[in-house]
Length: 143
View (cartoon, rainbow, N blue to C red):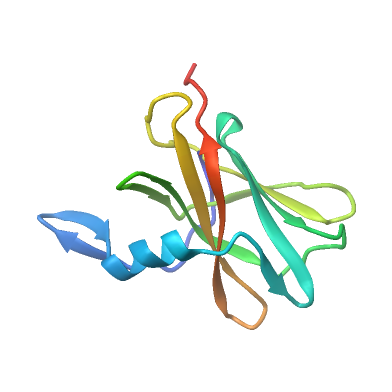
């Protein structure tokens, strides 16, 4: 998956034996991430399409999403494994602005049909960060 948005703040990582790994607090926060958010009176959900290497933010009621929302990072969780990317590429969503699509490249090489949880970190217009999740998504076979 590719997501291009450089300059985003790094996630809460620590270095262990020369490798960056999520802190215990971040691991817990990712597991506890909600599946919907209310921002500016809009209910926002996340859709993930791991077999197409993309994710989508949607407004539950079809109203335009705030243009100020920014995705800072994406995680995919499988059992005890966590894969992360913080370079995000936004594509054009529906014409009414009620969705925004993002591409993700270089996704983890996990087995086809593996269930994963996808969690994103968002920043709103008040500079507040939020986590948002979609659970039990299936990875498709790599071509």
